Image (cartoon, rainbow over all chains, first blue to last red; front, top):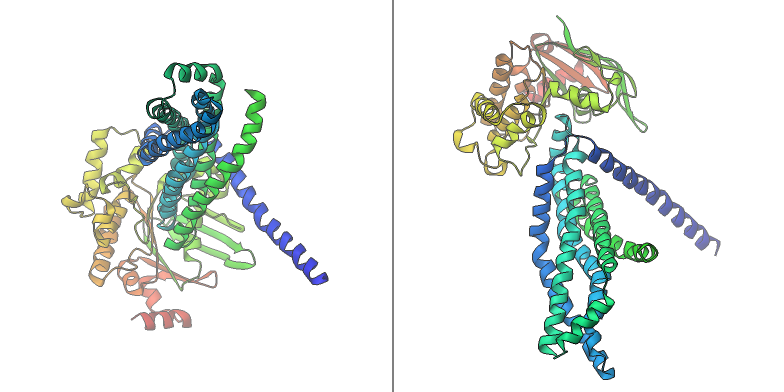
Length: 263
Length: 248
C-alpha cells in the first residue's frame, strides 16, 4: 500500500516537473511572438502569403464540412420537431447552433488538422535542416520571420473561414428544410429573424479568431521545438494537430462561459 | 598582424559538462584559419560563440574589436551582418529559388533597388561559378556541389568581414570537395581587398592543409596547437600526430 502511494506521489511529482517548464516555455514563446509582432520590419508580404496559404489549404474542406453539417443538422432537427409541428424552428435552431458553436469549432478543427500541422512541419523541417539557424546567423529573428506572419494570418483568416462556414451551413439548412422537406419559406425566414441576432455571429467570429491564435501558436511552437530528424518533424506535426484540436475543444467551453456574460 | 577574433579565457559549460575550458586563442585578420578537432571537441560551440548565439559561461569573445557581451540582442543581430556563414548542408531556404536565397540578405538588410539586387545577385552567382540554368531553380533541384556554391554566394551577399564555414566539405565526393576548397580559396582571395577573415570548422585534414593559412587544434576544450600549416605538419603533439597519420 505504501509503495503504491509512494509511486503515485512520485508520478504526480514527475509529471508536474515535466509539464511546468513546458508551460513556462510556451508562455515565454507567446510573449516573444507579441513582442516581435510590434517590432519592425512588418512583413506584409509574408502575412498575405500565409493568408492565401491558409485559404487554399482549408477552404475546400470548410465548404464540404459546412454544407453537409448544415444539411444533416437541419434534417435531424426536422425529424424531431415535425412530431410537435414546430418544424419552422429548424432555421433558427440550425443558425444559432452553427453561428455560436459549430462554425468556429469545426473550422478550428479543420484548420488545426490542415494548417497547424503544416506550420509545425514547415518550421520543423527548417529547424532540422539548419534553415532556422541560417536565419539567426544572418541576424533575422526566426520568431518574427516565421511565427509572427503565421500566427496573425491565422487570427485574421479564421473568422473569414468561419463566416463562410456560417453562410454555407445555413444555405445547406435552407436547401434541406425548404426545398427538400417542404418547410414554408416565409415561416423559415420569419423564425430565423426572430431568434437570430448579431451578437451570436460576433460570438462565433471571436471564438474563431481565438482558436486561430491557439492553433497557430501551438503549430509554430511545435515546429521550433522539433529535435532530431524526420522522426522529430513527424512527432512535432502530430503534437501540433492533437494539441491544437484539444485546445480548441477545451477553450470553447471557457470562451462560451466568458462570452455569454459579455455579449 | 592584427586579430579579427579573440577568445580570452573562454569557458562554456552545459550543465556539468565543460565544452570549452579557459580557452585562449586569436584568429588573425585577413587569413584563413581552420579549427580542427575530434567530434565533440567543441568546434561548433566555438563557432556559435563567434556568432553570439552562445554566450560564455566565463571569459570573453571579441570579434572585430567588439566585446560581444556588451551587445544587446538587437545590436547583436545588426552585428551579425558582418558575418557570412556557409553551413554543412548549405541550409538554403527550400521554398525559395537559388536567386531568392542569394538575394535574401540584400532584401533584408540593404536599401538596394530591385534592379541593383538582381545585378549583384547575378554577379555573385557568376563569381561562385553557379551554372546559369540553376539560377532560378529550387535548391532541391540542384546537386550538393551546386548548393554549396549557392550557400557561399548567399554568405557573401553582404560583403562580410568574417566568413564562417561549418564543415563545408562533409558528405561531398572528392572532386566536389576539391571544387569547394578551390572556391573557398578563390573567394578569400577575391575578398582580399576588404580584407576578409575566413574561419573553417573541419574534420578533413587533407582539405585543411590545402586551403588554410593557420590551423588551430581543439582538444578537451582547449586549443592545444595554433600555428601555420607548415608548423602544424611538424607538430610533436601526440594527438595531432595521430590525427595527421590516420587522415593521410
